[in-house]
Length: 236
Image 1: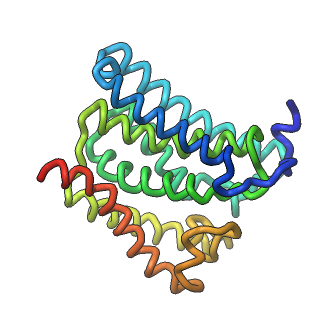
Image 2: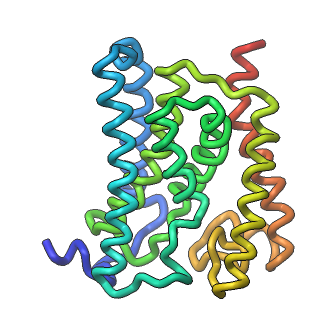
């Protein structure tokens, strides 16, 4: 059991391996299941249990990561603060589940789902394969963000508006400016604003630093448009 929490995993993560694909399939299956059971999930007690349980699960997953980093002696202010976009999305998605705030949904749907999908397709967990804690935590937290926001769409009936895209872009850029300042002050690389991640990712196709930030903005806008497209098509 202790092998599941060691600093260095026994097997490296393999992108789009059978395990990786099956993990993604389970998350997709949960979202499909929410659609088929959406009426039952709208009932008072069931609804509250699902929302509160998922919110608690998200917060516990983030707390467990902090514990694990301390456990292996790797926690540091430069690498371990919950400042990446996924951590912000996790906290805000938890609050969204508890409060059902539409204003939060306008942000977390685009930023949370967009960043979670990109992260799960190219996970930054080079040394950890299933069933290591880091692998399980990564997909539980990122998958939970996506599930939380899809729940708000399928069960709660929330729909993003076209202007929500630009609100989300504005807020994420304001947050990115804040993170850039933090990175300069403490010599960190949160949100990968100072250098690219070491594993293969979309960053590899966007040019060197700092020029990749501009196409990354375009990529983000296109991702938001794609996330809005199903609602546009349905409306038409």
